Length: 311
Image (tube, rainbow, N blue to C red; front, side):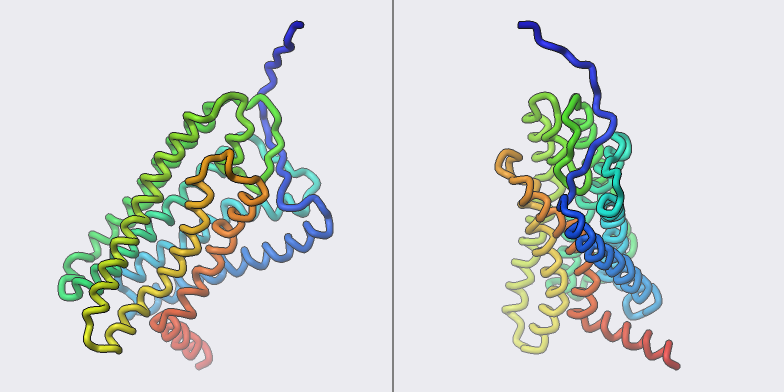
C-alpha cells in the first residue's frame, strides 16, 4: 500500500483555550481582563512609588522595580492574546507571531527566575553582612546583576526557541493551550522531540534551578543569622523584609518548576493549562499586592503619596 506524502507546513495555530462554552468564555474574559488591569496598574503604582520615594532608593527596591516592570511585560505577552481569543471568532495565531510570543514569554519567565535569585542574594548580604552591604551591593553591582538576569535569560530563550522551531510542523495545528508555550508546541511536532526536550530541560536547570539553589542557600544562611540574634525585634525586622520575597518565590517557582521540569508525557494538558494560568496571570497580579500589603516601607510610602494627593 502506497503512503501519501504531504508537503503541508503549518502556517498558523488554532487555540483551544480554557473553555469551548460561550458563557464560560465570557465569564473568563471578564475575570482575566480584571486580573490583567489589576496587574498593570498595581505594578505601575509600585514602580512609581519607588521612583518618587527617596527612602526607597536602595538595592532591594531597585530589584523590585525590575520585577514589577518584568511582570507587566510578562503578562502583556500572553494575556491580551488570550482575551482576544475568548471574544473573537477567529482563534488563530500566525506561526511567526506564535514564535515571537513563545520567545518573549519564555525570556520574561526565565528572567523572573534569575531576578528572584538575585533578590535573595541581596537579602542575604543585607542581613548577614550589614556592615558591608553598601560596599557589596553598590549601584554598579546592582546594575550588573540585573543586566545578567535579563541577558542570560534572553540568550537561553533564544537557544530553546531555535531548537523548538527547527522541528518540522506539518500538522495538526490545533494548540491545546491559551498561548504559545514550548511544551504545548513540542506536542505538535512531526518528529521525535526527545532531544529538544533534553535541551529545554538542561537550560531550565541552568536558568531556573541554579537560581533556586541560590535562594535556598541564601535563606538557610539568613535563618542561621536570625536565630543567633538576641533581640526579638531584630529577628522580626529581618524576617519581615524577606516575607514578601519568599511568598513570591513560592508562587512562581512552585508552578514553574512543576511545569518545565517534568517529562512532557507526564504533564496532563488540562493540568498544564491551569498551572500556566498561575504563573502567567495570577502571580504577576499578586506580586504588587504582596509587596504592598506585607512591606512596611512600601505601605508607608503609599500612605505618604496619598496624603500628598489629598493636600
